[in-house]
Image (cartoon, rainbow, N blue to C red; front, top):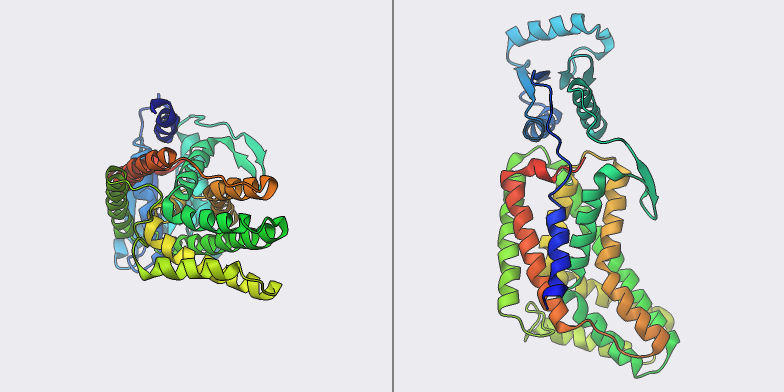
Length: 378
């Protein structure tokens, strides 16, 4: 038993052992941040800078509010002159000055540029940019291996829970009685595709919500508390474990409705009717999974928004997460299609993956609250 849980534990520990070099330079690097109290982009950069200060103790950020403070407006004019800021770029906030560069506005590119500039000022080479090609993701900087590992671990653990598995297992078991690979491919394949698409859209909705609210510190704290509570609930599920049971549907009308839909799919019907029935089933299952495993996509998408990456990369990381989330489905479906036999993961594996998931989500929730800089993998 110990061998089965040692590897997941080690992987979880590796998430937080990223490279964090000690700097030889003792002088503080000055960053001058000019903002308006009523500017949402300024608020978003302020949230970023708070995490940035924790990540780089060697920097010192000077903040100047320029909407209400006339004295700070004069200071800003001096910076315009010193840095030869073109007139067309003047008057906009936020604007941030480092020792040799300035940045107007705030977005992922500005965040990346600020960090690169600070690293140069500190005279360090934290990570040499080394890119490798990964299917689906394309070119990925190996400096973000911790984020890739987090994606793989959380996605896999998300997939291994009774609410996510029991419907597919029952569906495949009934399909096997028909002894028809064509029927297995149609019903099982459409179910997996529909379930995956709906789950992806569900995660994309969380991602966009957190991107829109990323400048609000309270959101991070709330999600951190949610992660801690969800982690404790998963640990409780491990302690009170019942083999193959989804506690959300156990003994409820929902379970009966889902079983009725599965049985209806076994009846002869036209292909369009079958496809629509499978999609409806997948939609119902996703609603169940929302209550069973919402902690995983919520925590992951919130952490993802803090990485300072491009918009396309956000969605590609969601796609990678989805791949790991559906690995167990692919295995169960593949074995059924090619061998016409039933396969299910052992109950002990599912039980202990629940424990690891609970511990990991609890740790991530605590880090979001107290040490969010650790979850910035750039």
